[in-house]
Every structure is written in structure tokens, then in C-alpha cells.
Length: 256
Image (tube, rainbow, N blue to C red; front, top):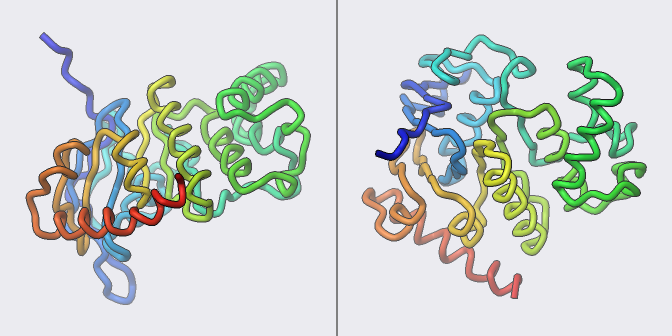
């Protein structure tokens, strides 16, 4: 008998409204399992980034619970969660070199110097950063290399979950594919659960296994990538899948 997969994240009826009265999330419930690579898809303003920020601890829900390994983490600050985020703008420290950027979280946790050095170099190798690049200022790196630094920094403290909020939107199509494939490789080899927002359809279909489609603050489709993309059940999901396929055509041409 196959071992039952473990739920690592459970959104329970998440509602998020802002002071201007706008209700962005309208009772979202969603389960994410260990070692999954999950993509949140949806039109602009549908609530996917808000949901990701609530999971990361950067926003508080107005109602509902976020369970992590069965424990409600709504009141737990970001730095105490076993969750790290790779941001759209990289959010690297410009006054630090690559090595020190990657080491930052380990130093905050007061890891020993030799442990920090071992971990930084180990993670750098996993994301294809050389020892020479570790000495450089982040401003000397390309956009794709800077994103690799951001990923390495997020991985250095051994999170159970990695969040990527439009982490490749500033990159060209070829580099985007490389970064997403790198994250997919990390998901498989390190067993880290990944939750990502991206519109790179071809890569989503090749590296992700779970997709949740949001529309107007609600989850309208949730399931295996192969099932949702081949036979979406809801009208909103069908419309989004068709539009993304159309948008991705020029992207695929640019990659060839």
C-alpha cells in the first residue's frame, strides 16, 4: 500500500480585506503536500500574491487559519517560520558581497563560523555559483546570477518550504527557464516544498506537479498540472489556461 502523502500547508477559509474595503481573498481553502512543486495561477488582482505573502508571514489574514505541519502559524513572525521567500526584486543586500548575502540568515541564527562557510559553499555549488563569484559584489552579477544568489540565501537555513513571488519576472525567457528548472531540481533533490507564482507556461508544465488557479479571490481549480491544463473544469480556469497558452507562444519562439 502506498504511503499517504503528508499535508505540510493547509489554508483554512482565508479571508483578506484591506482598510479601503477591498476583499482580496474570499474564503480560500487549499492543501499543499510535502515535496510538491505548486504553482499559483490567476489573472492580475486575483489574490495569489496576497495568499503567498500570508503564507510567508508578511501579511495577516482577516479571517481563517494557516496550518504548517498541523500548527496554526498566523501569529508566528516570518523569521520564525520554516519558510523562506525569493522575491521578485531579489532583495539582496547591496553593501554585502555574494558570500555574505548567502551567509546572512545563518549568522542571524548564530551558526558557527565553520558551519557557515561549509553551508555557503555547499549551497553555492547547488545553484551554480563559483568560488570566484562568492567574492564579488552583487552589483557585478547579471540578473540571473543575482537570482541564484537570492535562491541560495533562501536555501541556506534549510527551510521546509520555498516561496517564489514572481521571482523570474525581470529576467529574459531563456534565463527564466534556467532559474525555474533550477528550482525544480532543488525541489526534487532536496525535497523542499516549492510554491511559486509564474506565467511561464512551458516551464510550469515541465517542472510543476500541482497547480491552483485563483480568480476573484477564490480557488476555482486545484489539482495535478496534467489534469488541470488538459481538462480544466471551471469556465474561469479554461479561460486562464487558454490565455496563458496564447501568451506563451511568443515566449517559446524566443527560447528557440
